[in-house]
Image (cartoon, rainbow, N blue to C red; front, side):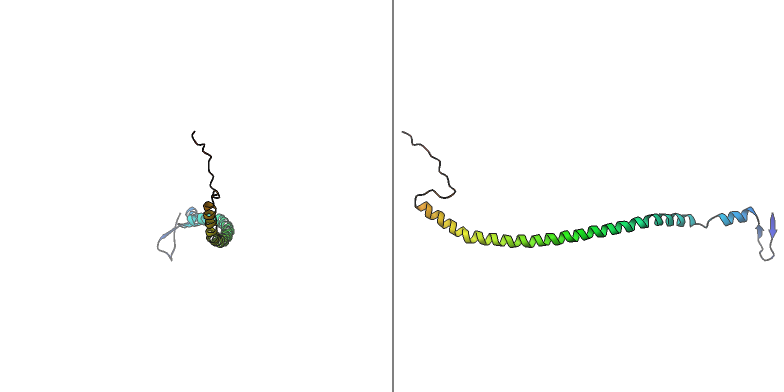
Length: 118
């Protein structure tokens, strides 16, 4: 049925077309609806992952602090070992020279017994 409206110069159709226009979403509305649904589903998952990652980052920070502490202790111990080797190394070389000059076999050196040929 074609009706003419005095205020509008174009023909107005009633009934099914009006209902179809009313029920037809505007362009992009379906995309917005799908996007909204995806966001509503995924945002809580993303928030949970953020909380999980913060815990992991805290553990990494603790491990880095532990490694830094161990590095300082190892450096300290290495310095003590080097000093001890330097201080006692000269003493042990002097002792080996003295024992070697007295005819005694040096510490750490083993002589194998070799029989003399007749």
